[in-house]
Amino acid sequence: MFIDSGRIICVLGKEPPVWTSREELKVDTARDEWGKLIAQGWRRTKPVWEEP
Image 1: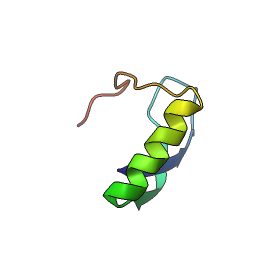
Image 2: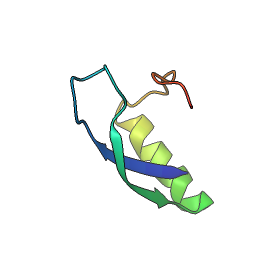
Image 3: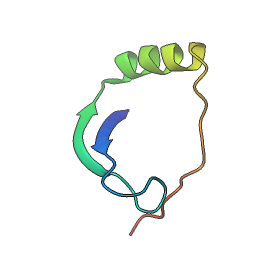
Image 4: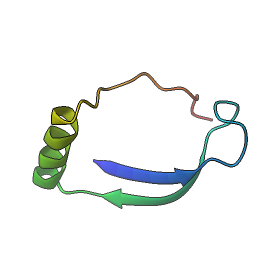
């Protein structure tokens, strides 16, 4: 699993954010992190921006 962080540089929703960092988690750590997010109410969403 990757955890991406970024910055919004223009009007929200008009363009994708600029990525500032990416952290790769090992499988066991990623499963634990995913479980925590789901427990907090996070849900999977559809992509907003298309891949170039």
